[in-house]
Structures are given as C-alpha cells and as structure tokens.
Image 1 (cartoon, rainbow, N blue to C red):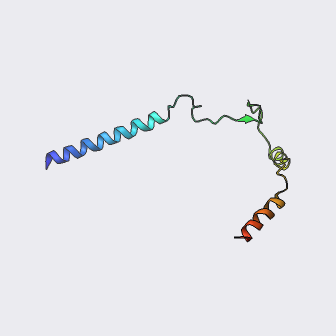
Image 2 (cartoon, rainbow, N blue to C red):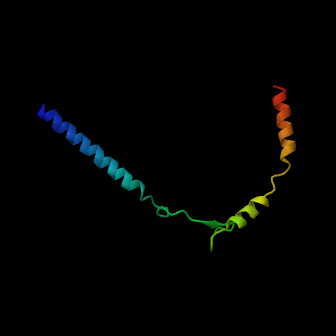
Image 3 (spheres, rainbow, N blue to C red):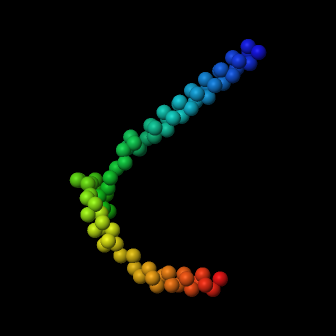
Length: 83
C-alpha cells in the first residue's frame, strides 16, 4: 500500500513538472513578438503611427467596393430553386 502511494505521488509530480515545462516552453517560441501583436498600417507593412479613429475606420469600410452582390445572390437563388 505504501509503495502504491509513493508511485502515485511521483507520477503526479512528473506530470505536473511536464505540464509546467511545456507551458513555459510554448511561451518562448522564437520569432514571436512576446505576446504583443504588431499593428500594420494599410498594405505598406509600416507600423501604425497614431491609431485609427472610429470615423476613419468606418470611412475605410464604406469605401470598399464589393461589386454587385444582388446579381450574385440572384444566381445563387436561382440555383437553389432548381434543387
């Protein structure tokens, strides 16, 4: 009985040490930014200088051209109705 308890304690300690080691090892992956997400400005790849305001973000979203979505959905609806 005593040998069984010692074996269980040793196994728990090994599993705990392994989990601790893996968690520390995962946070030190080479090539990462240390948990900080780099912020890129547009498509130039340069860092953001002052941050975007909500108005600037909304204006940029509104300026995106998504084409004629209604005609694309009409084609999809026609295909679905033919099923």
